[in-house]
Length: 432
Image (cartoon, rainbow, N blue to C red; front, side, top):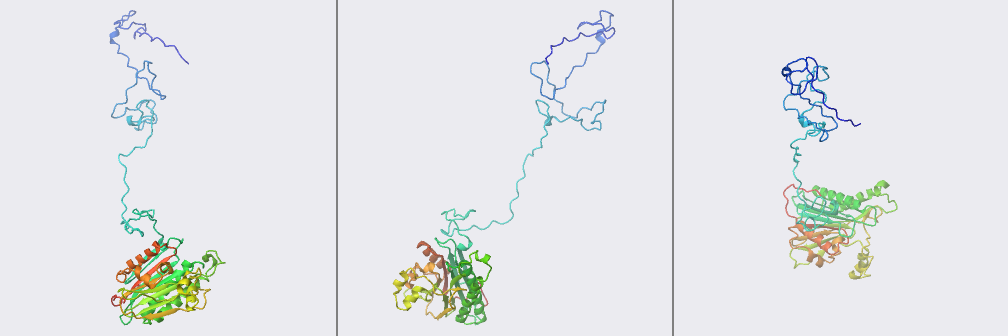
């Protein structure tokens, strides 16, 4: 509660305790010499913890503790600071609030914060856009130049193996790439160089066509390469490769239902296959289905040729003389295949053929994703680059681009082999 201020008491004589007036030199009662009494010490009240004194109350704020050693603790009672440590409640000036004296326990802030050490691993090489082939691909998978979204790994594949190269693309309409390929080169036992390409097209109406094409291309590529290195004739080696591919696709039908994408009502995995082997003087082709091989000479004054016959409804109509080729391929049933690899296929009949071109050129092995946009040999020769035999990867890229520019309605896979096969050095081999 509020209190009235009290008047300060007058000083007393130290001898007789009688009140004396301020400024008296002698006591009026006993005559004591007041000048000999020392002046009382100045009072320094303790600052309350609730804050500074209210303005205008006549109390001076105490000066902060001077720098240097802290004053000794009181002798009586010794208290907890008697062992030489600072007493409880004692703190340095920089740990107290400048205004109130309240202590704030703050963690000391460093003058500088350490930086993260740089990553010692080398930076990954920049990826180039598959569309414009000039822009860098950012971390989100888009080209910084043209903005084209980059495909998933199997959506666009490019590979070189010595003198042969292949490119496969998902196309613009399909949700996945159901094509697959294998390329390789080796030296035959007599020292003759050889190059090979296998292209497989998954049957979209079957279960797991992408798995079927991949299994077939791997099995055929490995078998064909091994047969050539043993000295097997290229045509016989091609036949063995197609049979091995058929066995690999048939094996997929025996896998558990969980591996068949929980679709037991669908038919067995299936695909088509086409391949080519090129040596110094021989060209061998083999196929089952409607993928094709074209021969395009470097000297375009010579005619190009299609080296395979489709296992399809349209081809059967033409062979039987029931329809012209133009009429048959204009029919909606034209691409219905009559031969394929798979557990539910008809009796396997691998087709093989040998050719001996009399001039250099390029061999184009492709799925219908390309030849739908360049069906006749003449049309194919017009879109194959003139330097395809010396730059097979570039040639395959151009042909895939032609299919995409035409609409890209299907997966498209193209392999290009030069004829004759250029020497690769004794004993060299390239696995598919």
